[in-house]
Length: 227
Image (cartoon, rainbow, N blue to C red; front, side, top):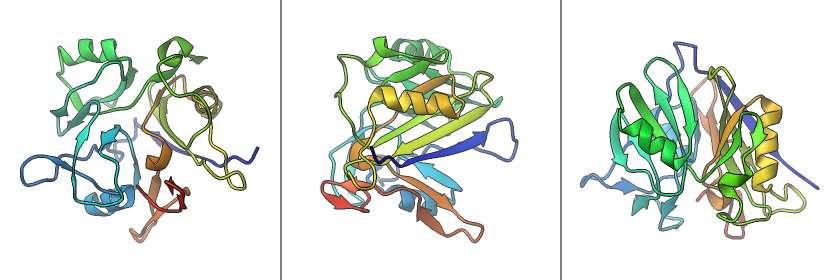
């Protein structure tokens, strides 16, 4: 079937590369809804992708929202992990780790060196193999737009994958298992499913700083509209 898959690879060993997780931006310390492209412009990012699930879902920016999972920005835990969801953690020495919920709790018990982190849904790839035991029976089956992250076996390469969906002529979307297979094909050994559906968006800035969407998100039935 028609399928559009986008992958960005970042070398975490490169000292010029910095991972950034957006902090709360409300005057009261709350998170406020923002499109992926807006966040990229606001914080001057070279690339941006949606990550932690949130609620409520709306088309309007600036409204208060709650995160359903881990968020660490500037070494501060802004939102705690939520069972049974996994996370990706980044450390000051350049390491990164994709962890299940229980592994995340153990890592946060001694958080020294963690600079930022983001939650997602479930670990879908572990040691190069499909981690069915983590998500089967816990997640919706079927094809949908997907956002996911992966790490190479040496932890040096970060893979960000976004897959379009909800459009049989452009891209029908992917299952959890298929998303894991794409991460593996690009070079990842471990992988985490991020928020998907209408939230899936990958933005890049060109050499002039102009930010554009790389993929084609579908909000409800509106193609090309960011959530």
